[in-house]
Amino acid sequence: MQTITWDEAIMLLSPHSYTLLSTLAPDGRANLMGVGWWTIVSWAPPQLAISIGRAQFSRECLDAIPEFALCFPALSQARGAWLCGTVSGRDGDKFAMAGFTPRPSERIRPPLVDGATVSFECKVTNRLVTGDHVLYIADVLEVHGSPESPMHLYSIHYNKLVAIDKDLHHVDSPEDE
Image 1 (cartoon, rainbow, N blue to C red):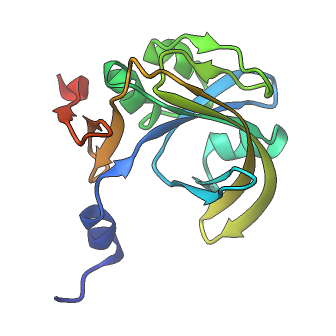
Image 2 (cartoon, one colour):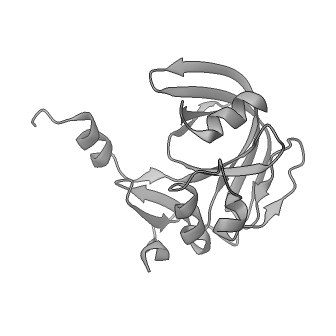
């Protein structure tokens, strides 16, 4: 074992589950962001946490409207999901750019991504500034799933997406085609 850099350690920890964060901008416009830094923080009550860079448009959205959907894209959504992690929604409609259909949520204002394998509707309950990121802790209000689409996406070294199902079947995603 040798001493390595922070970046090298993060890369070695791949794959990271890749999800789409759906928020609303202060003007009410829907926004999407690719997110790899999320975790379950409580079983009862069900709670998730997400870590968002301070400079990100999604952070502005969450501070204005503290609700979000965490939507795990299916393999068929890889190309659009990758786009959502590489461009800003500050000046455009990422649902349209990515080819996603917004689906109304049941208990929050931001929409869900139609066709996602699993989606969580969340309301922020706590916020903690951590260096260059903000950690948002949220109650999970509703959970949606698509058992017919069991393969969701994982980021490999933050430069490629692959899909893995619960039985560890793996498929390279088509985002590079």
